[in-house]
Image 1 (cartoon, rainbow, N blue to C red):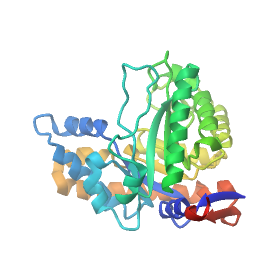
Image 2 (tube, rainbow, N blue to C red):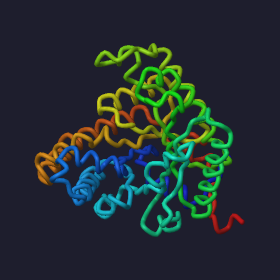
Image 3 (cartoon, rainbow, N blue to C red):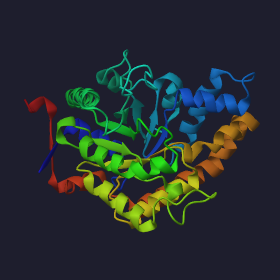
Length: 345
């Protein structure tokens, strides 16, 4: 029987829809969000208030239709204030980016925060991104594994779920959109899922990439992209990655176009991947940046209430058909023993 603390259980339910599926929106981009807005409006027009307002309006309008939203406090504080009260809140806990001068893309958390502090700010969960190469030297892997152990134990003490987002990379093939990277990505994702769902890390939800570059799958390779995988090979990789997980996982959109993200989820579900939801980001709201640049607040609101809402509702239909409730990974609600943290010692 799986044991879970009452705080974690209650908060995971708050982050899920009525089917026990995490149908969440991600808009915690920081540096990349600034670059997107600067590019859309022009550097001469750009003001940081535009990023604040963009996140605020996306949260205000789209959290009516999702189970939760992922936001960062730096640029998303107005979005946190305007989210729908029924939607759960996941807060970013990691520093953005990494120190390129130090080998290994080592992770770090916000020095001014703790999980206790995020709880007081209204978070139902914390998210931490970790760049991970399972083929790195052991000393690099030891540092990342120890980091995850500290994070997991802090989350246990604070009684808050932790979502961990591993992004795989390679030290030799640095273009992670290339056909060369596509060939090595599946095994890196599978190895990473095996490692990160080990009990020693106490990760509650794994937020993962799909195990292939979908633009290189036979039949889905638009724009003359090279075919790296047959559909059968891709299907096998999705199933292997899913089977490797011993804890619930959800998919991120990884900046792919809206249509591609929908295709990925349907393909995953059709081929036996037991994902428990999504944290969909740019695939949901990216085109809204151009709408905001062109039409300001009113232009963005029109886009969100039409195309943006349609994007979310389409994702919800896919999740209704294909996603597995997070608690089913543990055998179902009747197989989970919920305990009070204060009485567990």
